Length: 149
Image 1 (cartoon, rainbow, N blue to C red):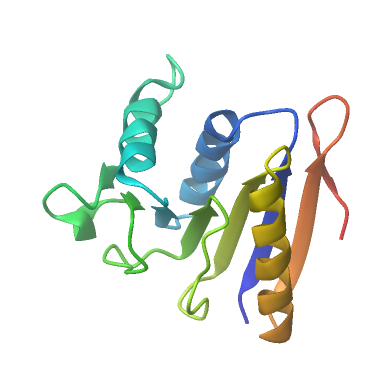
Image 2: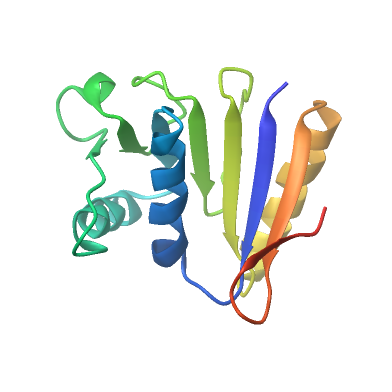
């Protein structure tokens, strides 16, 4: 059974939240794959993860670069898992065919985007029907994560 987490972004942007979640995953010794819906988003995240904080460094690469299997964090457009990641981050409401290879699947969605909210609800139903352990996190007024379900 895979842990499937949903992060409902309301006060902070994906670019502000994703690096911290990746850092925590790497601290646990997990490799990560981040699946995007477009090459533009992939390339923007690639640039962002190099510069998001002066005192931080996230080793990563993209599926457009050579040797994706060597990357501790891989940003990709496909459902493949060439770096043998234990954690998969799903962006933009993308569906995931098979969660079984992962310890954790994390869906991040923008609460101000009706299409992403609808997609997250569909992903929740799919994960629940598949018998995965589900957790739903929402930001409070101060921007902290509060477990809602």
